[in-house]
Length: 248
Image (cartoon, rainbow, N blue to C red):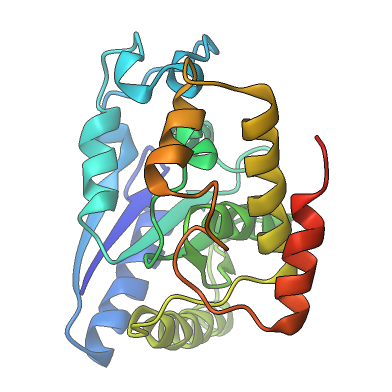
């Protein structure tokens, strides 16, 4: 198994060290290979909002940066970790720029079967809200495992360090369990609703001139129950048919 961790910090200190410790704990649980990617070492330009990636295809993006290099790392991994310090009560600017460069993936999902999680390191406050945001991102991209928030206010006491280590220990075991699962998860009612209503909107509002439309058609998603083959129970099958009738 290959796990890739993206660190959205400009220095190799608390966030980097927490990520490294998490990955080492993960490696002790089984056959896991990992790589830590420091986003500050890559050229990432700020999205211009031109919508070419959304409407026509990501290959037409006018920005010439390292987006595709990082995208390939995700594609070639089994698990992904987003690690960020708490800057101004949110993810770091570097992490936000990174996520914005993959906006087209939220329109055209493709990371099914990959396991996502996150680590947030803060000094004082609101880190749990950042974890929730990155949990949402992980769900949108693949299968998410609830992230963790650590406190690294200096100087770190022995008691605080032990608590951080215990959090990472539990997190690594939780993540490893999901990483080893072979089957794709059954969608929740909310996930089913998002899929059915999204394709309704694409059917009604777009055509062959839009990449979202051709992508859904190529994947067979205009006729499928979900993004990937899945057996829905009676209730979800019934609700799915109801969602199909919702007009955007």
